[in-house]
Length: 328
Image (cartoon, rainbow, N blue to C red; front, side, top):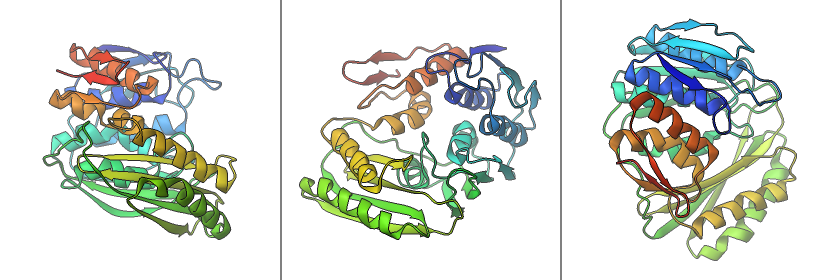
């Protein structure tokens, strides 16, 4: 059995999610302890428990000690089954973080799997709906199909995301970006945030037009009872995409647009993958033994590397000064 220290690195949910993914792929059981040990509320929360429950359903695996607040869990995977699965986070916990725990092994299994997740689609500290669709899924477009989606914000979530996965070949983004082609994005919010969306749009336009490529930012009003707003912008290069997005989280609409645009500008002045995409795609790069470069090596990425090495006994080398991740 693989032993995983859940307090490693940033000590959050990414250690658990990556452990689930690697367990399903390698068919090795694991025990994770010290789950979220240094958080204000340690142990499993609803969204983390949902990750385990989804993995159990998809593989007909076995869970030991899995309950809300548990700081130590064992998971015994079975083989991934095709079929349709639905699971409710029962909070505004991110549906995309839940999906992250199973997407890698499901895609590589080449089984046809449909997953419907109910919870938060655009919430703080997680990839949002537009980031997931336009950045992550872009590289797996031949093997995935979005069936339906509905935005869900804090505090209750109540959004949903329904995805069909049947793994196919995939090409990962190149660290050498090539030429900048265009900048696209979206400002979005609940139905009563038209004013906020207009302010964000002006803020983004002011800061992004300097790049002398076409800038196309859409507006999207969602039918949801939870009032909130956010924005997401991404740069399209010849060889990859670079994105930045955020939900309001108590920022004014102008501050939010400014924050997101400035972050994208920082990425555009750098090189390699944006940090969030590097975190999300690491397992695929490691699986293909392809090196890559990112603008920043994050604690999340280091946590992913730790778990990968524990399951495979393969070593990943880092050159942090240049953002290099050497997977060969």
